[in-house]
Length: 287
Ligand code: BTN
Image 1 (cartoon, protein in one colour):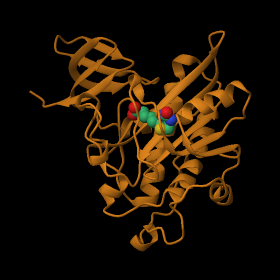
Image 2 (cartoon, protein in one colour):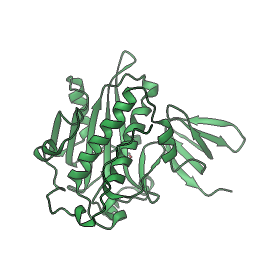
Image 3 (spheres, helix red, strand yellow):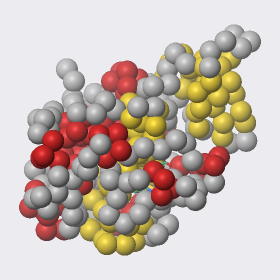
Image 4 (cartoon, helix red, strand yellow):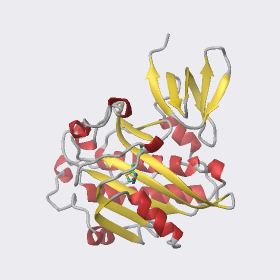
C-alpha cells in the first residue's frame, strides 16, 4: 500500500493567490495550521539565519525532539550538497530543516532522504497539480529543471546515528534569473513552482501540507516500509545515459537502477556494473 499523503489537489487557481495571507511565514501561522501529531511541534521560525541545517544540528546536540522544525525566510549561508551554496532571495522559497532520530544504520540513511523526497513530491502535487520528478540523488525536478534539493546531514555517535537533519530547499515563488550569479558549473537549469505553474504558490499552505506529508512518509519508514520502490519510480535518471561526477572521479554509462539503500547502478561501457553512492548526475544523449 502506498504511504503517499493525499491532500486535495488545488483545482481553483484563485485559491493559489495570497489573498488569505497564506504566503507569509510566521511561528503563529505555522502553529495555527499544523495538523501533524509530532512533526513541527517543536518549532523555530527565523526571519534570517545563516543555515537552518546548522540551527537544527545545534538543537539536535542539545537533545531536541524528533520532528523539530527550523524554518527561515532567508538564509545568508544556505548549504547545498557537495559543499555548494544554496541561494534564495528573502520571501521566495521554503527553507527548512527537520530533525529525526531514526533507528537506521548510517548506510541506510538515504531511506530517510528518499521518504522526505517523496513527501516533497506529494505536497507539491497536492497543492499545485504539477508533476514532480526526483533526480538522483536528491534533486526535486519539474519539467526537467531543478525546483529544489535536499541536504541530509548526520550526527554520528560511536558509529550509530544519533540524529539526522534533513534540510529542504524549495524554489516556490522565485525567479530563477536571480540565481544567475552562481558559477555556471554549479548551476543546474533551475525553475520554481510559480514559474512552472504560471502563478504564485502560497508558501504557508505548501509548508503545512509538506509537514503532513513528511509525517506520513516518516511513520511508514519507522514501521519498516521502505520508500525505495516509489522513489525509484519517480527518478528521472533511470534508463538514461548519464555522467556521474564527484569525489574526484567521472563515470559515464547507463543508469539501470538504484539499490535499496540508494546507490545508483551504472552500466559502464565495458559492461561492468558500478554502484555509485554520491555525486552529481548529468544526462547525456544515448548513442
Ligand atoms: C542541494 O544542493 O540540492 C541541497 C540543497 C538543500 C538546501 C536546504 S535550504 C534549507 C536547509 N538549510 C541549508 O543550509 N540547506 C538546506
